Every structure is written in structure tokens, then in C-alpha cells.
Image (cartoon, rainbow, N blue to C red; front, top):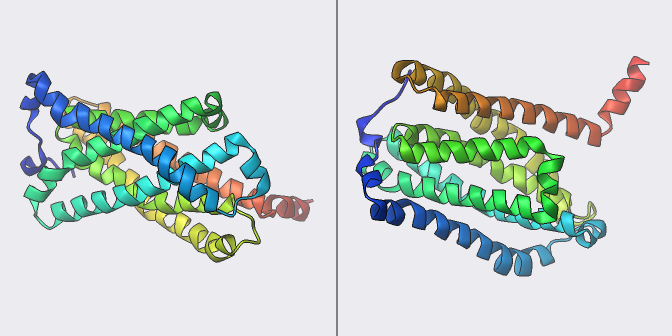
Length: 269
């Protein structure tokens, strides 16, 4: 069923006034981008990462170290965005439309600011080594940035964007697991948190990430048929496809790391 609630539609008249557009959209996006850059340079790089019990080879490798630093920023962002988006989602479900309308646009600007920062950081570090190694991650960024930009232009997409961003609950455990796995396996941090984070990563992936994209894909396509605008439908199907492929890669990587692929090959032989 397509949800088009008049209470969640943002006033589009702001696009008729360039100054209003700058003050309500452009300035907040730039502010969030600069905020995340400052978080990386002055907090994560100087205070947090130096205190992590990283493996020596990771600490000596500039690319690996930059990956840990940027993932730490992503980890903090996921906590912030999860709190915001779950609150907005519950506010809408409970009928607090005023709270939803008051903060949904600010949420979209903040998340768009983070994704633009993360895209630039990924392209700058080691000449885009992260995206060359994982091209699907670049496709994911393009889809997310496109959907966020669409929701600022088309008010109906605001509600869908909130649903799509519920996946950030999973990102907390996804990023946390990555950071812990860069640490020394004998460290107390690794021993205490690697397994619980791994379990929660898969549990939240199947519920918050895959569940939300499974809802959005048919909803977006149905909305496109009713309105003649299939852009959101294409984006939602693309997001679902990326999430399914990435789940396969996660499982494959974990099985390989734990030696299951070698074991099964021996069993077959």
C-alpha cells in the first residue's frame, strides 16, 4: 500500500526562493559536511583511533589506518542517525505529525551532508582505493545520495527516506564489527565484542536493513505507477539489489575467514 500522507509533505514553495533554499537546505548540508570533517581531524584521528589496540600492520599501513578512522566517523554517524530516524518513524506511527514535519527535513540534510562527506573522503584517501576494492560501495553511495536529494525535491519521498534510513541501526553493528576486527585478536576489546557484534550485525541486517528495503521496493514501484514518476521505484529496487548482494558478500567473507570454504571443499572431495 502506498502511503501519501498530507501531514508529511514539506512545503515546496521554498524552491521558489533561492535564499530560502540556501538557508533551509544548502547551509545545513555544508555545515554537517564540515562537522564530520572536523570530527575526523580533531576527535577521531587524535583521540579515539590512537587508543584502539589495532594490529601493528594496520597501524603502519596508511590506507588501512585511514579506513579505520573513516569507519569510526561512520560508526558515530550511525548512532546519531539511528536515534533521529527511529524517533521520527515512531513519531509518525504514533500520530505526532508536527514533530515529524518539524525535523524530517533537518534529518535529510544531516544524512545527505554525511554521505557527501563520506563520498569525498573515500575518493580522496589513497586515490579512491576503497571504492576500487569495493565498487558496490560507490554504487550504494550514489543511490543513497540520489534518494536523499529526491526527497528534498519531492515531498512524498520524505516518508520513504525515513524508512530507508532505518538501515542505520544495522550500520552501528556493521561499522563496529569492522573496527573491532582491525584490533589485535588477543586484546580485551576484540575478545569481548567481536562475536556479539557479529551476531547483532546479521540480526539487524535481516530486520532493519533488508526488511526496510523489501518494503520500499514494491511500494516505490506502485507509487511510480500511480504518479508516472518511476525514479523512486528505480532507486528502491537498486537499494534492495545492493543489500542482497552485500549480504551474500558478507556471508561469503565470513565463511572464508572461518575456513568453512576450505572445509566444505575437502568434504566434497
